[in-house]
Image 1 (cartoon, rainbow, N blue to C red):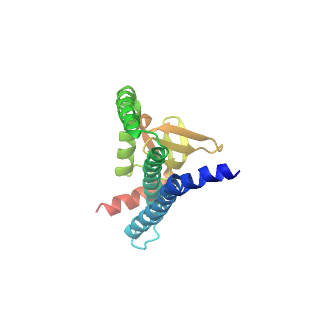
Image 2: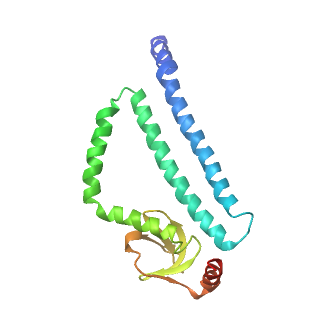
Image 3: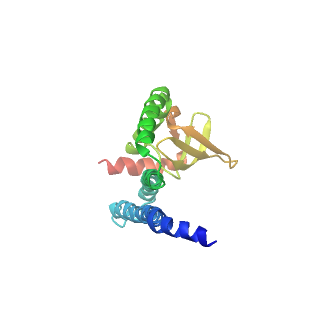
Length: 186
């Protein structure tokens, strides 16, 4: 037991403490970014309690927070691997080569992301809107850069890749949204 403590204590004071600080810093940074993203987007609403703007804000917040979460945790993982003695240079080079190969082979994924960007930038639909995409009709539960999730009247959740979103139909209940969009462009 004493030998274990003699080995563990120096390791923890050097590597373990750094790993703990990396993970804690990643967590804190994510919380700060989450707060900042929420505050900036909600400030953009200018205190208006417009349902359409609230839906748009929720959509943008979920996308930005999700992207930040992915980037922060990947960076933290790379830093932890480095602290554990893993040479990350070959790992990063390998990831780059594999990423290039996957990127060329995964054109559909790239198409999903590009379509997702245009869906969000053009404000085609938002979380909470009732829409029809192809044969799927229901309420938008989630929008990411890669896919859109729609819950139908039976409670089934459909995940549709954004590159497959060709024709979108807004339901008549959303005519008020269309009128507000038209009046905001004047």
